[in-house]
Image (cartoon, rainbow, N blue to C red; front, side, top):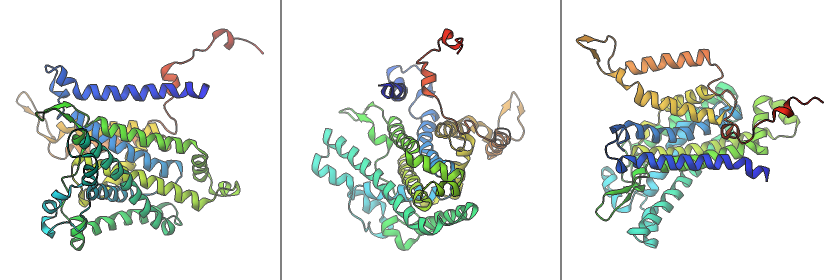
Amino acid sequence: MSEKKSVMPKIIGILALFAFIILLENIRGIFPGLPMIFDPMSPLFTVLKKAAVYSLVAVSMNLLNGFTGLFSLGQAGFMLLGAYTYAILTVPSAMKEQVYYLFGGCAFQFSLLDAFQGIFGASGAGYAISLILACLIAIILAGAVAAFFAFLIGFPVLRLKSDYLAIATLGFAEILRAIFQWQTLGPITNGANMIKGFPTFTSFNITGPNGEVVLRLSVFVPFLITTACITLIVLLIRSSYGRAFVAIRDDEIAAEAMGIRLFSHKMLSFTISSFFAGVGGALFAMYVANAQAKAFTSTMTYEILLIVVIGGIGSVSGSVIATFLYVVCSEWWLRFLDSEQYIGSFKVPLLRNGFRMVVFSVVIMIIVLFFSQGIMGNREIDFEALFNRKKKNPKADGKKD
């Protein structure tokens, strides 16, 4: 009974978050006089969607780097695999000739969306069911493909240590990016061109008979998927496997002496982390409405790693908090630094294109220097304390033994 009670604050908090996101996304439709910040096309909702996607990837990286102690830099490569898997599987067959026009069509004609529409119908409730099932299965397969490649490369690279592992995984990600841009594979990957036309977050908006949007869910969907995935990661961390990961991170010799099979658990952590990175890649493709290999550079991996460090290595809630702070600062709050600003007739010096990243880099350096453990360190948010479920009895506290 006590376990159920301890779970309830978390469930209530998650449901309240979902309700708030749906209300926030649709509030300007209810009250049109609200400021433009609540407009669905405003930077607020762009930031929320990107932060939801990046938080999943950051937590998946923290599972490997923070909880298992394996320094991997292949996150962008696994995201690329997930993005392309999702895009190829969900582009409607009728769109493939248009998308792959440089190569005379796609060599892979199957589409999950078309398959489910053939079963449930292409309009009304049938289309909604087809869309949900097609996207859900494609996202799971995106993670599975990333996990499969992680399993394959895990045999050689997981025998490496520290910096050598980081270099090997970074090299793998760069090789993948080059291969997917190879024109010879154009009939499958569309070469250096982007794949478009697949369902995105906006596809889940509910429309009326005249095509007008009745209920917007484009922000709710990434939050829902990300929350479900992070919950699974948290459950894994709290299981016996998660404790084994932490033991490997703290002391491999002691962990092996306790009977923990080092290579098997490292492979499990590497594969699971890559699975969720692949899911994150599929969500990223839905966010930007395309899949293109040149977007998944090493810079993306460094961004995710920076988020993990800022949030706290070994803290899931720290990674989530740091993701939202990083995205909102880099994509919104500091954007004004990239354009000329005037105070009366006085031109503010230094403000020009690219200056935002200079200031942002300085802020990050200050955080890393003075908060070396990150925002949360290795701690997590205590939901029971937030909900104030129980108050201490002052008489009991003052009672002497």
